[in-house]
Length: 81
Image (cartoon, rainbow, N blue to C red; front, side):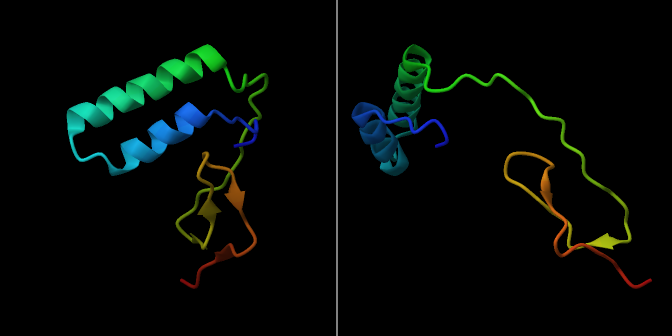
């Protein structure tokens, strides 16, 4: 939560949606969450940084991040053939 967004109603809806077993009710909860976020505008992305990564069948242990291809090369190495 890089924007430090806080809304008690959204928090309550997130908690409720996480345990709701009725798919229709869960969809309604997520729609309400999305509507609140549209109205609150907790963050506006103003830049999209280019992401560069590598790909080769011989490269092992190259991890990718949750937000895309950017990741860590800390443990990457060329695998033995």
